[in-house]
Length: 591
Image 1 (cartoon, rainbow, N blue to C red):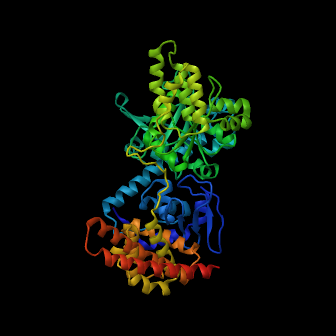
Image 2: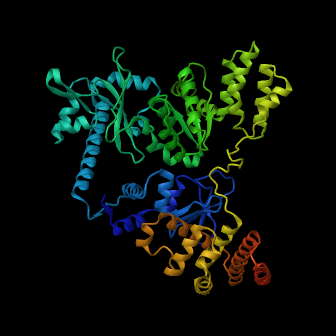
Image 3: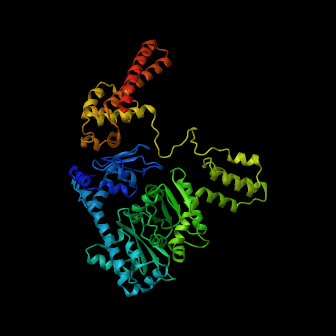
């Protein structure tokens, strides 16, 4: 695959407003002369620990250690690789990409993909024009109006209409120079061997463009306009560009709102999504059906860690919720269920109750586990011991996911009352400890807990970057394999010692092939900016590294019964005195 030129990557870097990019997901505030801070978009927290350097376009989270530059930020937040991150930013900020030594076949594939996307964009524009200008679309306009959808929201989502003629889009595409083969490849047309022709796939239907996160149309969802049309909903077939189970409807419009809202709302249908956006909930996306896939849940997790399921109040919607729970159980996503009146859907609720009713319903969302517990209790047979045992068997793993809390206690009381459980049986049900890993350890979600030694190593390197002239001789005298226990910190120290402390990210050629190192260095640079850097603190961290190394050697010698224990103990005592003196100087300097 051809490589995007370094010059082009730098042009993208220069064009991006990093504060604007990050602010779409979290609110930033001034934290110093050259830094901003906010709640981390990569893990749940209440106290801001996410630091941003607008000039250098770097970030570092002191809570979960997420770090990097604007490209790694997009990689992590959008779930794309480096090349896709550059392409996404180039598209968003209007930078034309150039490729170095592009293989002719790759160039052809890229040009072909761009051509197919252009065909879909042209079709979308044509369908939208037909909805508003075509007399044939009058009934469709009336239907959408009766659903409570205004013209502004329909334009925002580029809703259109496919006329009843068998060759409308075929003629439009041919006139623009596209081939029948291209029409078939993107699912706009179908073969009719009996008539020896290629005809429109979508005929007499309301058209909903299905776009990726960059707003590029990949396919269409089409709703029937007559009662005798089958199926009621017809989607573009899976192909090179569109895959039904990989996309969420409305992501391109919702993504800029989910970060500030702290949640993403999920509906089933197209009109549900439009209705909630119109009701003032623009952080809403759609499943385009009821079966949530793992890929879709991955897309949701990149939008927000809190997902509100606002699905139709029928059995199909409830089954979709259960499937979502099964998929989400290992992703650390908080799933909540929005209660809707029986037989209702989000669009109907928005139409009858307006924005107030929608926001009230969202505010009344309940944890998924509560919904599932009540659902299991309602469906269970409680008149016999066997029936209650079956209900308990279904409830036990759900309680195993709950930490000790008022919610857990309340649900336990509900179960006990409904099943008439004895205290002993109830205790047996609740004895499983939540969030316990198979090895007995406690899960910590997205936060990476650094050990004490790595914290010291990281703090020392950050001070080295902050005080390059004073730190250079200290870093040079250290044995990297002896004084650094963390592989990441050891690699960063080697890079800084070999390339210099003045500009850690200047060696683009080396860092382009080592993304983990680039992320580590970016995080250290942000930490250096935030550090209260003094020579005394630098010396204290340097001595702490030496002390820690000596203590590790002494522990190893004692474990092996080596004869050097006395000598190492003497060295350890000397290192402790040196550290205590350096620490005292740092404390005195800090006042």
